[in-house]
Image (tube, rainbow, N blue to C red):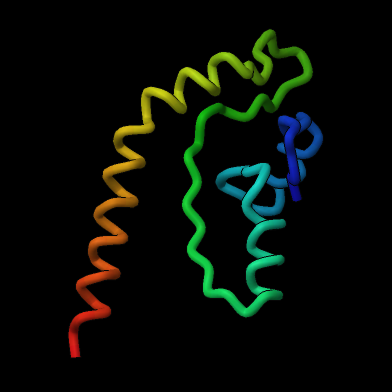
Length: 96
């Protein structure tokens, strides 16, 4: 739905919530479509960095600086997750 690089609108958030969405991302689906078209297996991992603004009267807005700050704060945890996952893939590839 969201292809970025832009933040979701309030209308999009409301629609996605009505459809049962739990999270909104701006750059997973297009990459997955291309990868699958090329016959690649895909695993998606997302780092959620901001809360969706759901009200037109809200003073809150998507804030790029805050998104970047949260990305830096969570980078180490994400790196550990991916390192562990890749290690497990290596272990399973060696197993009979």
